[in-house]
Length: 145
Image (cartoon, helix red, strand yellow):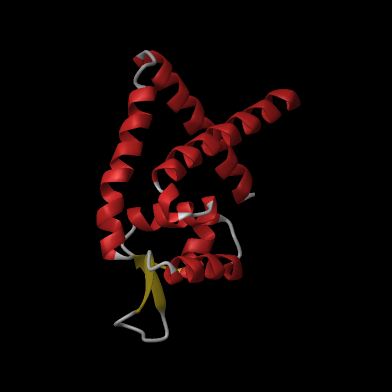
């Protein structure tokens, strides 16, 4: 059983690496690290987030994420904004111009991945999804303990 667990982890890591490469190829002209791409991807799906929320989502320390955000802000890809409700709270979001330019590239990557996955029979896709959902539930239950 232990070898199968290691196999699953290696496969998941390999899959995530391939996803990152697919996205990174679309933004290679921006000279971004994979961590920067992940920050942009998360912020693209959310309107705005506090750095601490982003840190939790990425599983990285606040200081690490703050450094990533600093570098992305220098490149004018994201921006920091003060909360209107509480001026002490600073959130980050993708710069509007960059988000507009990235929208079509992101859609291209998403379409490529969808096309690749759709080459498999529906039963295989359902089987993969069910397995991933089960794995996620197992991990969530373990973390709760």
